[in-house]
Length: 291
Image (cartoon, rainbow, N blue to C red; front, side):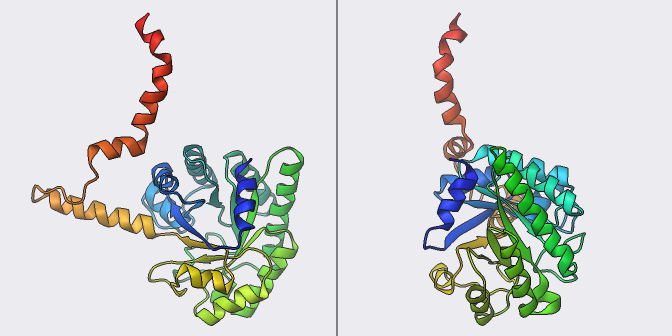
């Protein structure tokens, strides 16, 4: 079963999947080891991790797809990757979708922001006009169908940030059209109240994703409540990065006092990275080392 097929089966379940978001292969590997069913490569976190810079459209298509490929190769669960605006016009969107499918992603997110895009919970973001937004999703869906005809597959997660500039009604209208154009998952970014979250789910078909940023604009609700509202996925884009950064800062400050606070022991660290599995598998070839 492909990662895309696995993701479709997960979305058909009557639950809201908790989706911790990764930023590199190691963070994704930890997510899979802890038993989560899917993950998302957060553009915010990947930009911080890979180039040490904010998520303001600075990472190129090549850098992002390379990061996604490394992550997808490291885990058995589906990865949803952040394809930003598709990196250009509709033809660029098609190339982007194909590239992420080849990289092993189960789904790709395409959004309607103006380039360069911005994190959805930061100021200054703007969206393109309706027709350009629709062309992006139409192109993504067309490429998905071509891939499926050729034996490949990927899901399209269509995102709108129109709530910020134009209000919730416009965002819902755009997402409705995204679904009609063939999007598999819908994502209205940054509803500001529980009532707005309900309106999103009540008015849109198919699977919906909630994006929970601690300290962000969308209410941080319990997962059971998100399911009752109608969400299929609860994404937590910054939880792991924030925890990792805090742990590193704490350790760095402790080292000045000759302390090693909160470290994972070396045995578990080796195991989680994969040393034990490597040595176990390599024993099958031990005879070649004795010759």
